[in-house]
Image (cartoon, rainbow, N blue to C red; front, side, top):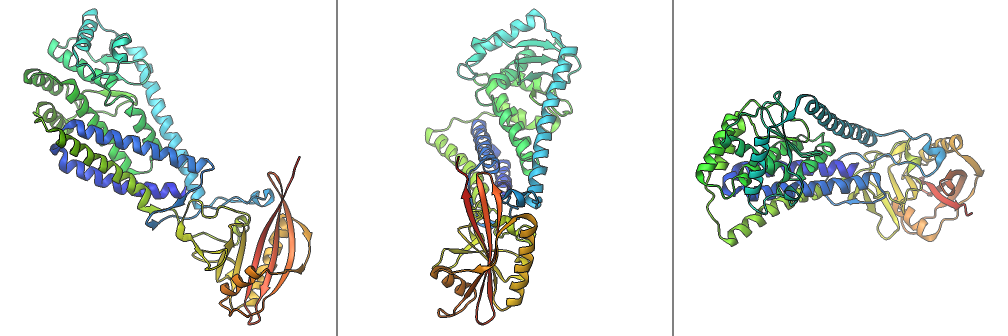
Length: 490
């Protein structure tokens, strides 16, 4: 979830810059190039959402590489079932639950809206007359080859229905393709314009299928206001694309007739039902759409088209680069007395964290865990291979003794004690690392003692936590929580 938060923040910055560039340069590129921009952006963001979902719900590990660490670390589940039963969600887990609830609500709202509209269609619509259906079939035959998907010509033509309660013509994009008219007495000029526009909505190669992508993005990033702005702009851009492609190869007179029909349909736009497209629009976008239809796009040289396409493709890449590289997952671990034991036996402490969250202790296999504060009054917390945890008390052995007593109490309350106090034989590497943790010279002798061993169950056997302490002659100490495991073989 930390990776998702960081990519969402970076994506917001990239989207804001993209929309600013788009509004400033809208008339500098032809309409087809902007369609490429929004289509590529939708595809890239859906791919990124899928990868983020794999990291949240799958077993994929990830180390953040962004420039600015943000957020709080996750509260891991202990590999021991007895400790995991005491687990309580932290801020990141709560955010995950809220996000899932919002995404589910968004999908349900869109699905319920589509079903409500389908019920209205069943109750209120009737088939259009034969002449209207023939007009649709003629317009379909006259449209440019290569503009629509092949199934527009191989399947039966979409059925035309009349539904008087509509504010204007509507095409159904989910399920069977339908074209809905609010009335049937349009003149021939207006009816042709309506059908050309709605056929591109239903079958156009440049727009077909993108509605699903934007619906998924809206559900996945429901909490992100920049995504809602981008979706709204992409929806308007879809209308521009349909206007442009519906008039490809048409004379100025035909395009003027199309603009008149669009103006006659202008109405204060209500919220669309999910899975539908409306040719009618409000005054806010009507002017821009008429300009797109009537504007004579000057033919460009091939190198100019390639250059503009590459520029807009680079803009898509910049948005994704902002999402992946501007912010990183958290740079500090949130360690408390309640969750410290959950970190024992975690082999992937670097997962979904910024690289700077673990700082290597030079010349050793130990890493310092960067934390805002350390539990039990320790000055620092170290880990070895992510499985063993070490609390450092440089000057206060009494505080280390108190921490050991409290940890022993917590372990005894949750796990089975299988071994008592004894000696802890420090290896040469362990002793050298602990001297560095305590800032001692290389000759200082450390005395190790084992305070107990506790056993719990894992998914495939038993796990053991050993509580030990290494004391320095000057009064400092290191408290160790050492992980061990025994597998159960059939």
